[in-house]
Amino acid sequence: MTFLPISSKLNITIHILLFAILSCSNSALVAKQRFALVIGNAAYSKSLSGNLFGPLNNPLNDAKDITEMLQQYGFTVKLVTNATKLQMDNAINQFIQNLQQHRGVGLFYYSGHGVQVQNINYLIPINQAFRDTSDIKYHAVNAQWLLDKMEGASAQVNIMILDACREPLPFVMSTAAAKSNNFGQVGLAKMGAKGVIIGYATTPGMTASDGTGRNGLYTQHLLNSMNRGDLAIEQVLKQAGAAVAKVTHYKQVPWVSSALFGNFCFGQCGQLRQSAEVLQLLPKCQKHLKANRLTRGRGGNALACYQQVLNQEPTNIHGLSGFKKIEARYLELIKRALDRGQKSKAKQYLANLQMVHSELQKRTEKAHLPPPSPPSIPIIPQPIPSPSRPSPQDNSGLLQQCQKHLNAHRLVTGEGGTAFACYKEVLKNDPTNTEALVGLKKIEARYVTWLKRALAREQVQQAKAYLDRLRTVNPASLALPPLEAQLKRMEEAAAQLLQTCQAHLKANRLTTGKKGTAFACYQQILSKDKTHPEALAGLREIEARYTRWFKRALDRKQHHHAKQYLERLRQVNPKSPTLPELEARLGIK
Image 1 (spheres, rainbow, N blue to C red):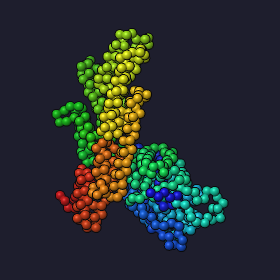
Image 2 (image 1 turned 60 degrees about the horizontal axis):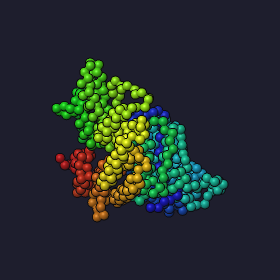
Image 3 (image 1 turned 180 degrees about the horizontal axis):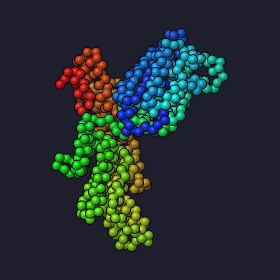
Image 4 (image 1 turned 180 degrees about the vertical axis):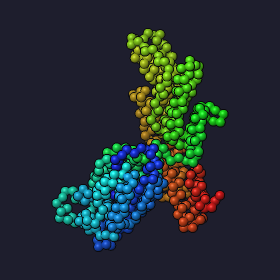
């Protein structure tokens, strides 16, 4: 992989302008008012009287793939490829008019040559010879000018994406430029406007990679992050940036500067794009909830229904909020039972509430989400203990409670208390209490056993969780160093496997290939970690790629190839929501 200083695929810069805070749930308004201008310039020619900028490989693919992605999210997209200065100016002016009229969401994307001259970034059109800095300053598009026009349009959300890799300016500087210390610096200069978030493909003033696959390196990972739909723009930038830093071994480190006032997601915030099966399940879950079939019922119940939703999509926001709604319903039932003096019913509802909350804890932990806050149960509080030192009899009762937590595996987390906190409380009263010290050793030994088991099964995320809890119990544990070293080796092996998967994906070895396939590789990762985000994104990219190839083959009347792509799409995801449409286009009933 070659890293170049200024020009070829200018780093990705995302500018978000929020003059009015946009709610993530206000998707209907945004969907009608999303406009994008996408420009991809690749057909540069060095034969134009010593032109400094030669042809590029990726911009047309970048522009087309970004266009398809944006259209899926309801953007009205104007795609311009291999544009001259006049064509770029005209397209920009029309884009700004749309923003001024509708004031919804505007997105500008550019892929092509770009340079910094005297702390100003310029986008390079085609069919123009650029021999020195004066040519660039007067015949290229000033990116800060475009940013200022977007800010002045007063749209709800403005996004600017500039993707280009840099190379030095190997020409004679003009007299004015020669007097400036800011001439010809490597990388892009910082840009800004009021209320914006700016994401650079690399730290300003440094270099970025052009990429070796279908897309530029940053756009490749940006597409993966955008594909989820549930992430806020900050998370999209961070996820794409982290992936770039990792694959380049931190030779290219993206950078973000934020003055963002609200939230924007390409899809629905916190909600992955839903499968057809989940869309059918959610109304059924709501019916069970309305009918108070919470955890039991002849025709099914809300808890089981939302569990099915989360089995399909572990981070589905409706599934997770469904658990909270069940909890809220049980709280109402507990209060009503207590008001009527029905203590046995209240206890039954309380047991069901605790079961639901325990299941919600497991689901959020599995999905690597923050733990849910415990419900405020309307039970008469226990008397506040006296601050005086407890007697041995008091410690005896407390130790029995600690043992119950230990037997129930409530070690450092759990509803109603934990063994770790309980034994710590005993040791506050009696620092030399043998049973409490032995109890802590038992907790430590249990986490060591579970951690070794997770490592043996190559369950990296589970092993990390156990390792963190072992550190909580005993940061000086002798078992920590060798287990940490083993986990580190496993993480490095997992990273190498992911790089292999990405290499297959870049080479279009999707489901067939002598050296292995991306599909089999990602499946291998998911067999160990079903929620691995990069592996899931890889499978979605394979699915999207076969969909694009199918449509292209059908447009070219290559029905045999179209059938092949359809079969491979079924192999990758037999439940793909695009299958019925593609089968219909091919005439398959």
